[in-house]
Length: 401
Ligand SMILES: *[C@@H]1O[C@H](CO)[C@@H](O)[C@H](O)[C@H]1NC(C)=O
Ligand SMILES: *[C@@H]1O[C@H](CO)[C@@H](O)[C@H](O)[C@H]1NC(C)=O
Ligand SMILES: *[C@@H]1O[C@H](CO)[C@@H](O)[C@H](O)[C@H]1NC(C)=O
Image (cartoon, rainbow, N blue to C red; front, side, top):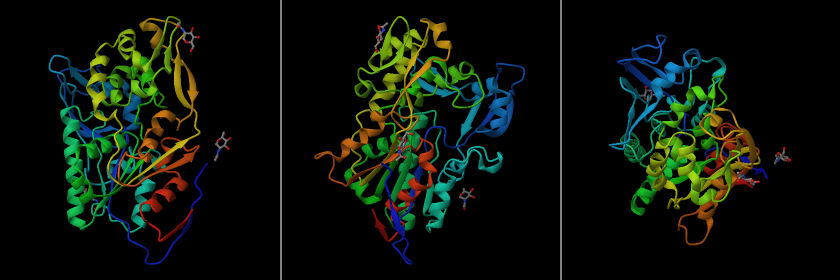
């Protein structure tokens, strides 16, 4: 059921508190600079000054192999560390600002790659000021808090919240989407109650994949072209290498006995992840999975006033059928069986925040706002959702439900 909200705007209504936005996976720009000893093809640049690695659509489509080799992550099993590919430096533009996630590829006409553009515009129209009362926390979405880059992000985010609060003399509301909900949950779970009470007005997580998504197993097995006109297998190695593609993988304790992948030889549930990673020819995946599992899989209540928003009612990949066993069988695009969810995140994963409403979970307020038929990415641009978001942030004086 879509929530019906009748909004009555009142002149001089309560001012909206400062907001920090924490985006999801792939939802902000990343820049790179190259000085590589070698490349995968003569077509690729060895040297380059800073350029937009994510996202420059024409560059990605024209030289997918070069792009994949530049953005992939290296994992050193011996030292258990993750890093950029050799000769690649990366940085995230405008930390603290919103420009890196308003749109991903500003060179495209008609804001074709808009991400948080509408949300930012609405927050500004509600009286927030960019870089002052409206802040953004873009990040290198390839890394989870279990690696150096990801751990530094958590500290930077904490400082951004403290600085925003100090500069405005107010507590701060956090708005996160998708993997940004995991980042924020991780941060909040690390803080003392005193810190949360001092700095956090409210947290609004949208479309949080708390228990992971089945989709990630297709990505690890066959690659996922994410709607781009590139061959999935071409980017599979690059996608497998992101630490966050394990953070977002189905969490065994929640997916339980649900069969996620089937071949003529066997069915794999999330609990079978060691066999799954072995059989797809990526045994390293087991170690990467174990690195990230302790981060947020407990889905521990955040200890702040929280309004958990998500949508159900959209066909969402739940199970993948391969007609052939063995590694080359996984090279082929599987048949997808859908379940409920938001098109990307499965229902059981989105609904994990429902448990925070149960007695004994936390003493701060918890509200779940469930939408229908809004896609995962639609949750940050749909007019009805944004209206509800503004209202939860205190943008209107009177809200009649
Ligand atoms: C959502 O979509 C389903 C299937 O198309 C439809 O039956 C249902 O009425 C829709 N719900 C809302 C609230 O739009
Ligand atoms: C916010 O700050 C960044 C970095 O200092 C700057 O590039 C950007 O133009 C500022 N944005 C606004 C709207 O002032
Ligand atoms: C996989 O599970 C399905 C039921 O979900 C069952 O029909 C099938 O026989 C199983 N396949 C194997 C190889 O065990």
